[in-house]
Image 1: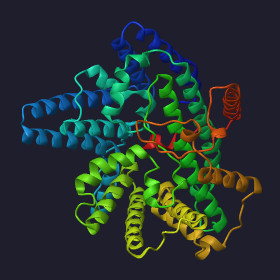
Image 2 (image 1 turned 90 degrees about the horizontal axis):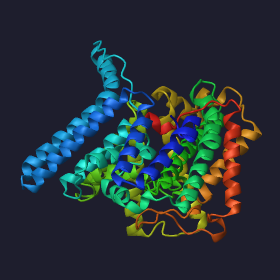
Image 3 (image 1 turned 30 degrees about the vertical axis):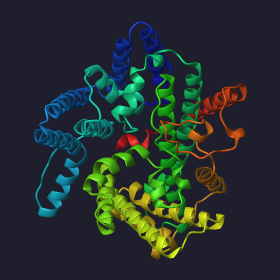
Image 4 (image 1 turned 90 degrees about the vertical axis):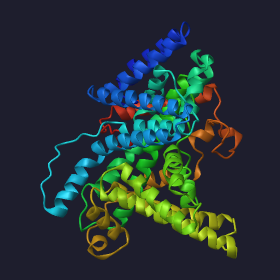
Length: 494
């Protein structure tokens, strides 16, 4: 059940929403239970057998967290550390079984000439996100930051459907106080209007923009040939760069919007990453909660930047390689992560040079545009590995983009003016325009991730914006019935 399917929009969502506020008038615990049940139903709708997996994971981690908390209360710190390590190993082991066993079995077989048949292992939707959410919870319990004594509340924390299948990765401390606030059980017309607007913007990004880029990217990546013209290669790579941007940005907007309908605020997970002027800034804007998770539970425990700059580079590379591997069991994802690790190391090295020599201190517009373009080109090159079906395909596309050999010289360009105009318009919007969080004045907690924009662009619950939202819905409905292929969100596969 996708966020934009009729069964979700016209059955699941209104029933869940109406019953939540109705039940909440009598019992907040019952409202908790209803939302948890609805979330499990939403997840099980994909494939009922996945319910056993997520239920087992929840029971295991809740029990493990309870044991961990009691050991801390008793002052048995060594035992707590052992239990915490075993819990993490179990969670990573479960994730590794579903995501990596087939890949490593194949690689092991090729390396040693052994046939190792592990069968077909289907990746359960959302397993990475609910596993990471629970790992973050266990780490916070181990540090004494949180403790959940209500099993029902813990189930809701893990399964809350707006974030369940593609993030954001949540922290217990930022969500449970909101669920426990009984004021949030009363229907709020302002949050409802804001949520519908958020959802509409995200729907438009997904159905019209992201899915509109997909055929252009697929034409290059699905049929990679030696006769790929350079212009086509660049267009295909840029189209995928925009597809994943608007796809993930759209999902993030829809998740925030859906959650606002229930008066719950999700963390900002996307903040105009293609406006970044360096790779460090890019990773502060792209998949923010995943970056936070990797920083807090991998990079910092490895030593962060506390053991010298060279150790910092090693820690960055290790973190990004594992982050790349998290996205999928393929050498292309590992190289994508390694490239970003290399980019980050170069970025830090350049900053250290700039700090001692004064180079690059100028903040003129021309220099800023040059930095932004350089960052975007580096990101596009890395996305080629991310999108390509194999390492050979990625190198073929990159060879064509670089104007090297037959990949760029043979064949004729099939680019049309309409396609080029569509891609250029989306690229300029991603690089220059305010994002949804800015337009709708959305913030989370004390930290504001956005800059000020002109007042006339800001959202207001008025007639003009209501007309705009209605127009967006009409456009999405029109595109939805024209026969275009309906694509899942790209991050569902991770």
